[in-house]
Image (cartoon, rainbow, N blue to C red; front, top):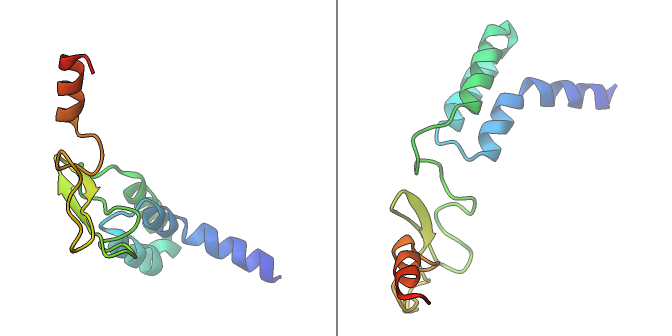
Amino acid sequence: MLPALAILGCLYFLPTLLAAVQRKTNAGAIFALNLFLGWTLIGWVIALSWSLMEGPPGLDRPLLGDEAMDGSAWQLVDGEYVRRPPPGQPPPAGGCHRPCRRSRRSRAASGA
């Protein structure tokens, strides 16, 4: 009986689970819609479609949240999240924490 209830609960909150896994900025609103109107089936379908919709680029949060365990933080650069170094640590050479688009282009132009 308990496994059946767990499966039904997961199915009922599937839109909320999808929104949470995808780190949607409106996951709280999807949860509220799912909780209060999911039983109507139309509310569940609306919550599911809302959780599957793609939002504007750059609005979803990074997987590690705002602050990582080492004190580094995320910042939005050119529509993508990149990690800033922890306080007191200098940024890597070139100013980027991963290869930037400009760096790739300049490397391709220089033949490196």
